[in-house]
Image: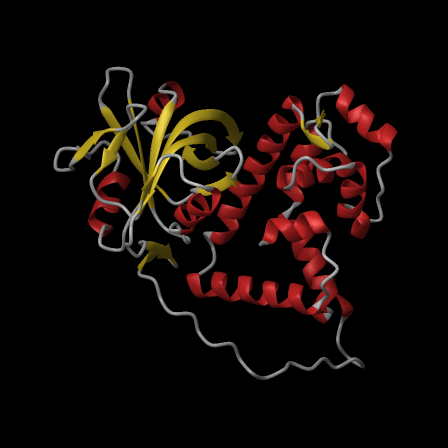
Length: 322
């Protein structure tokens, strides 16, 4: 299936080809020569607008090309492309000498084979420790019926079937168990706060308090949203923003009045993209330390926990999850 203007479902399907896989990212240098690197830090940022990100080591010889070209193409590799991944992972090698490629819509080299490809206009560049985080706006994408190449535990792998869930139930010794070690709510809450720490820190650095950040996230999921919609979204947090609070956000261009409610303002969208980019990059680092089986099982257990803990999910979150 090929689509440049496909719908959100098709775009989500194309993103799903990545799994926790391997990509080759390409662009052109200032002389028009093709440049490419192997990267496993690819991730989605937003469906509307269509934004993706990846990260590049600051010491990479390709840094200048990717920072100045204004575009790049991300190729999700198929399981038969180990050799190609190794070739583009080598520094200083003639990576395109034996590689079939053609110029894409923005000029970035497009490889002949892949599981999915995303042609992107460079939207943002962020500092991320010893890496640069590149956020791209997807202008065209294509996905093919190929299993993706995976990388975990220090080596390549191919897709594997999910293991069936275990039927046993773990018990807790209420007399001797430690709250900090075994209490499920504590473990889930601690995992959330630790994983979300870089995101919350960046939001604070950008002048967003927690309530404002939650409002921006909600409006990125459903827009327009009325005052009542937003209050419903935040009901589980104990916060209920007033009309005056929303007006203060309008005054700062964080949100904007549209039709029957509110949507993201220009400043709000830019701040949210930067916060999400940092969060996605940190998530990629965490996922990179997990095996594919661990990742699949973790997601399965979290979905099951969400299902078991009630159906009173705020309407905006529920619509986004479908």
